[in-house]
Length: 196
Image (cartoon, rainbow, N blue to C red; front, top):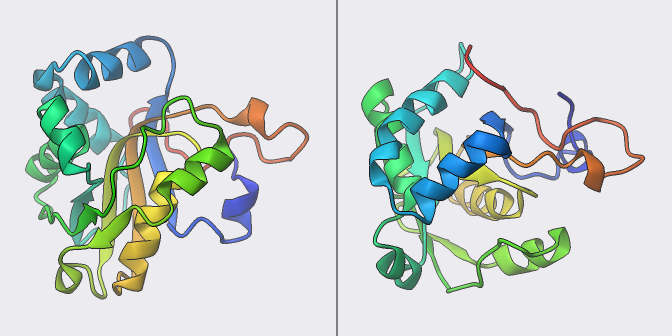
């Protein structure tokens, strides 16, 4: 589907990003039901969708869920990325490691512009278990990839801790084509859509 300018220049901090589908329509509605409607039972079928979006032939050493600040997690009652990561770990047999932590409570990314998202995500992560990522290929799991600011910030921390590679896996990605206007490349990230 194409690559964004940041990815083409190697400035994304993560090595690849794969998503099951586009953040639109029924998939968007179901993600909202899961995340905001607190329908946790969707984690298991979503895990199967994430497994379907994983690239064939790529081996991962550990799954790391995108962390949530403890206050936000307490208010929501769960971290949706952690539930998704657990489902992927169960289906794939890859070990789950809570290697990242949120170091500050930043405002929610929803509704922010791309530049606001980058500023908001910068400095938001710390490493909890550097020994668990050192020299390893990490599969970073989250629900939605929008501008990639959060994924870039988290991947940067993982790489500084010694991760060899970081691949992002999400249920959905925002179709950013209309935001990059005249730039060539179609969508913003390398994306695997649908089943293998």
